[in-house]
Length: 569
Ligand SMILES: Nc1ncnc2c1ncn2[C@@H]1O[C@H](COP(=O)(O)OP(=O)(O)OP(=O)(O)O)[C@@H](O)[C@H]1O
Image (cartoon, rainbow, N blue to C red; front, side):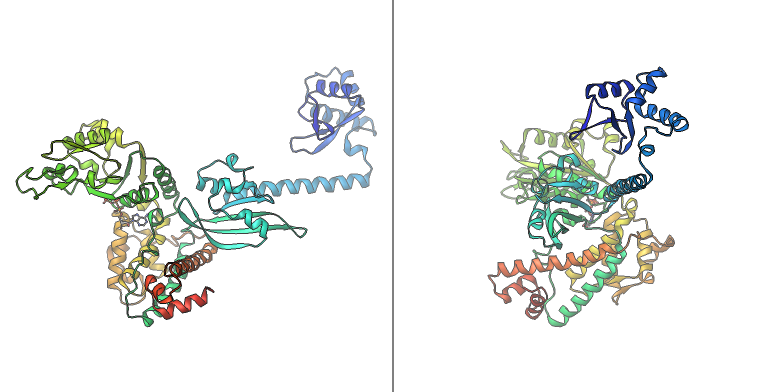
């Protein structure tokens, strides 16, 4: 009943008249402060006030704030020596109190606003104290980590965030901006900013910058300016075609471009699916990236070093499907290769078998696949014995499997066996904000691959591309980029250069997200940072030999020298 704040005894405004009486009696006190739900003192409960209430036979369950209000208004009229705090104090003290109350309210409002801002922030934000213990973490960061706020607050940052250096930043007091930090195998741009007070570091703020597609046009434009500059120089300096080096080629989840919430959720699912060996069913229209997702799961999982074998079930004639999947023995059928052939299941041993277009699988073959999945054994066509296989199955389809189960064209038992983890990829027209980033990514990738100067889009051309409905999804977008690279002579792609069918829908005033340009700078920093890291890694791999490092990077030696100078390596 008694409410204590440290050693001070107080009464909360919701407590009853009876509780107030018991409190004063128990502590033989004359008066006690009344505190509201925000911790503010709203008045004082005195013996006189309680006597007043008793004389009026007030219900003992009346909240004390109501008693105070009634007493104040009556006492205010009848008695200038009323007991509420504001009336007891003299006018100077009252002014001071008013100022303090105002300040407290402001602080309270500010704290609320800060929390709202933090949670609405596009970036992930985490705050640690001087010991590296998490004091605050916002919704975006929690979502990215797949944890709840309560699971993070109070823990040491190293127990919550992979590869963090926030605790080091607290010790050194040196800000670290635009660093690359790998979280769940994904390179992320982070900032670490120490918080100073009275000449001491009392904590640090960590910001996680999602490889965003907001401000995409600006990012795109700047990125293109940068890269065009760089590729012009490189072209002048070297005859050799710039190659996409193994070190620079993005892998796994990095290849999945997009920050639309649906894609962010897909990435989250990929990370989870990679941790377990369960079968995965990926659904989505043709060209939405089902195979990219399957590969990402494989590459993020424990069998990443094992094979990834892809089978398009729709592309193989029914008569050959069994031999293709399970292999065949020598002389198993007319036309069989001498010596036999291993099947895809065997080839995918200790790796992943990606069964694309599983909805097109004939019923008879579905039964065989189910058996292989359940028994983890396969038998070649014409074979006499079974072989054990350890394969993770990822299946994909653009067909409505549930409906096919209902009408008997897809086996229910196989459906449930495959549908353990379900990932759905929405069509591109439902995630238009990802279009500019996808264009940027594939333009950069292909120009590099073909050894041509990077091309950029005008805003008008970009608007047409964002507004187009992309029935063929990302695959169609990739094809359009390739077409543009080969058809457009100059470095800038104008609206007029686009195939006519893309322009059938007129763009609205501005289709592009308009969220400021902060991320653009970060993107630039990220590009610089990752190039610096790539060069440093190549140097280490080449044992310090610059000619060899340049060869590994696919750039001219003089370009490497220039970059070494630029990055202070
Ligand atoms: N999120 C993405 N980021 C970058 N590229 C993507 C993305 N999604 C798809 N792509 C690209 O689009 C093309 C088609 O992707 P993919 O083959 O994975 O689609 P799919 O859904 O498996 O198609 P289908 O159903 O026809 O087999 C590929 O070139 C792939 O690299």
